[in-house]
Image (cartoon, rainbow, N blue to C red):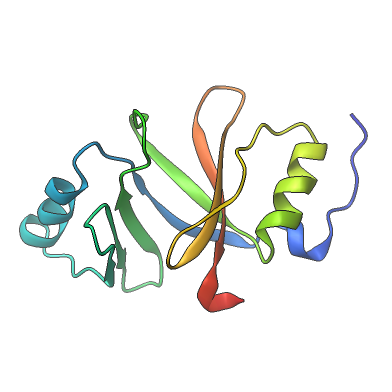
Length: 127
């Protein structure tokens, strides 16, 4: 596969959020909030997910991804343009789902060659 230089909007610039998917996000939100003392910086209206911004600026989140969540933690890699990034990474061989919108972001999910889930992520507050 020939390597090509990514367009600026398709370059991964960091990790926007990391954390587990859950079949019961309300339970996990309560655990991280009430047991570990983390204050949510945002909770989905239906409590299907929450974000906790940590003191160093890292964001930890829990969410109900739909379907059966994979065990373990996944990273959501930050990009400036979700559509450009997904097209670019697909052209290089990545298998990614179609981008979709949430109230705060745009996301596309895929798996690496070992089956670990990851996401490509564009925050709306950075657009």
